[in-house]
Image (cartoon, rainbow, N blue to C red):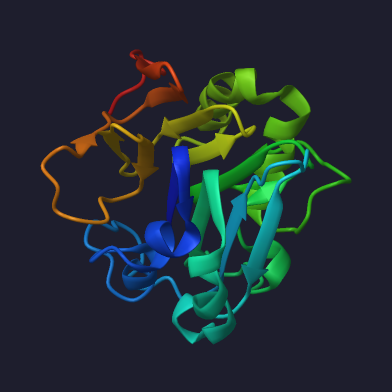
Amino acid sequence: MCRHLAWLGRPRTLAELVLEPPSSLLVQSWAPRRQRHGTVNADGWGVGFWTPGRAEPARWRSARPLWTDASFASVAPSLSSGCVVAAVRSATVGMPIEESAAAPFTDGRVLLSHNGRVDRAVLPPVRDAESTVDSALLASLVFARGLDAMGDVVREVGRLDPGARLNLLATDGARLVATTWGDTLSILGTPDGTALASEPWDDDPAWTDVPDRSLVVVTPDGVAVTPLDRSEPE
């Protein structure tokens, strides 16, 4: 349904993370290699990042395909950050295509991207969601419960909607928190930091796949991967 990535570490330009790798998010917007649902991600894109001296994350989102945005391509080499979340979107059938529906979503403290789908009927009503799409409602639920409870939210929603795909990727600027629940996620550890991505942006053998139904926490001190729910069938 979507492809997303996050980076925590030495500041890197948005171009280095989103546009320049051989299988970057830009390429994944028209030719993803591991996407299980949908074929292209042309229904919008977004990037969120922290900059020194600013408490809240900055965002740039659009309802257009990433490959059409010449303005972002011209500015991205000049913008750098040590904490970034970016995504390209393939809209679920029936969901609106609008800027506010593109990840990452935020409450001003956390950035969150959702790769997947969920029946909106199983989610509690919220008044502060950025959009009516399932991903925005799910993001608001995580914001209300807190980043430490993201794994619990995924388990609970997954039991209410057994067909849900709940790959979440979030950050508060100091750590990355991600879940795998029905789709792919890979980790790349480097001397400069750690990347999480729906699929590797290059063929570096250091990329490792995260098992399905896992919780991933990345801090400057390392990476922890723990099972989310061994009792549920994979």
